[in-house]
Length: 256
Length: 314
Image (cartoon, rainbow over all chains, first blue to last red; front, side, top):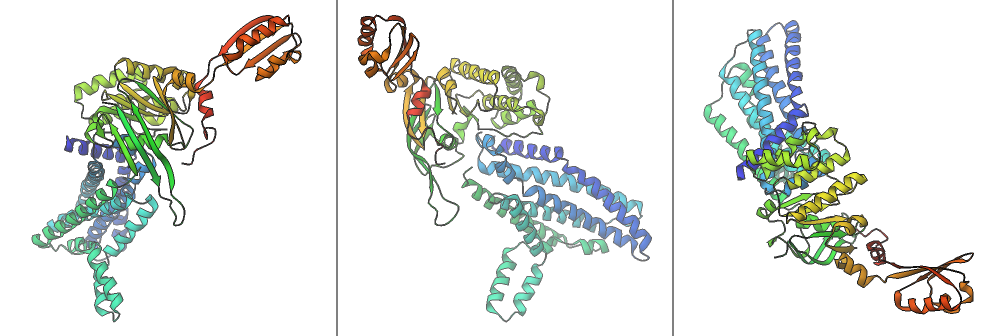
């Protein structure tokens, strides 16, 4: 019963995303990928294959992050603003089950997106006779982990703030998450103790999204160590789990 | 065991800004709803009705006091299997069709597929939406949404049904359908606790009623008892052939006199001096046309309550 309630909420969230035409972005992705590839084929003389490979991964990442943030921020706040949460919370379902169901619903939407985008991507590579290697799949797997983490961030903020504020906070953390090595470098080079403390604190607190970014190596055809991939995936999933737990704790205390 | 037990319930909302005083929505509210009855929770806008229902459903926590539903603390997850709830002006997932919508809530209530199918068919028929079962809710009128909302509250055949303003926004036919539905629930042995500010609906169907104003319960009991005990029944006497101005005893006793030529209407505040006035009419050569005791209404009782004619503080 516990799991079935989560599955019911998750399935309904997925259905909502499909009926809100979220999956139309796949068309956008396909057009973007094919359009850019055709353009680059005409413009570049060297490394045409690498650019197509690189652009495909970047497009996949971009489309996924846009969905994760802009759907994620409404996962809970929209339910509260529209008061649909009243009738759901009147059922024998705990608030944690509701949060988990909403998260898994969007995660499944993202999974479908990533799988379809990957298929389009591989077809494009095949069309341009670009080499397809395992490193690409490693990069896509870590892109998906990053999407799960960004979704958890958006969900966490959406439990206590408005959609607009959640979007700003999630975007800010997404950007900072890709600059964590710079934060560490600033902390090491700064002479101010305050700056050192703030930057070091931010470095450890903010998600290190760069750890999940191996697109550059993958485009070059360089595979990462399986142990690194496992560790990076574990890091991303644990961070997401922590955020979901925090979201449950915040949501548990809310009055509607 | 009472279906609903509320004792000394208080809810205070913190102000959003420092320095501003907190807002009290409920102030020591106490009431009970017995099993198998229809209880009307009557009050003006902002009197604390919705806050009370939200606390009972676990959507909001009380600042202090006790609230129990079917013998369990309000908000208990398991007891919600036996409660159906319809919030005020509900918004539902409008991308779902009526049957998908009911199936969603039925699954959440843990209904098996076969039973769920039967309940959906039955309830769509009860609320008159069988023909709209495959239509998305975004194409529903407000009345249809209210009816499908009622169906979701009943999908798991609950013991206790809590409805927040179930008749608001409905046309007279829709209101009658909802009234009939509530009465049929009582016939099935269910308990119905509903809030409203539409007095005739309460008078027509409720076994008992509670009047809440500014977060306090000002009166509770059977409608006829409340009206009889707390509202003085007036008497209207119509006669002809006398001029009331010339009969001081009538003028002194009446709360209202309407003289139209030989016809005269005299309103007395109660039946106490009725015989005396009738004797005075006869003594002055007047002819009695009618004597009508005016039954007090819940509406008059409601407006006697201090603060009932203005919005509350919530």
